[in-house]
Image (cartoon, rainbow, N blue to C red; front, side):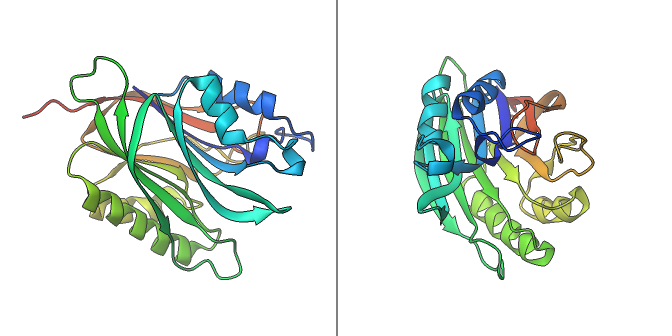
Length: 233
């Protein structure tokens, strides 16, 4: 299976002010992900041509989807989404603490049952987009990681733009039984120097290195990795 996270900046091109949902959809399709976490999406916003971006992406990918609004921009919902080739069930949306003057932050935690003949096809997935303020982001991450651990002892994935460097993320996730995937810098997209988009795993084996992909959309690169369920011991 392929897992991906992508902060899409509501479809704005990497360098410039032009926005286009069609180009955003094509970028997401190119990732070929079985589970895709997307941040900074618009729903029926004037700045995005009134497109329902989560639905448009899901239709193009043949995926199911769930969306959590974190705020309203120009009067329209804006937030995060989880998409999967299969079923998404038992969905919880968490209101995260802190943030100060920053925008409200939320997380989605859900059970994903992948389509196709996979012997063990159920995993628990969390996705979020954390605050820019480091101390609050660490607190928020702890809440998400703990919620994920409490939901399942089986295969688990955390995907998202955490706005934290690996040294800040790794110990928080380790306490919840998650291992951070080694990923190259993904921000800013035109010349990446920061590693703030992350994937963490439990009871999933990583198959090959994670990829950081520039798509021409957003100020972030997308992050993609392949994995397989651990065999029962």
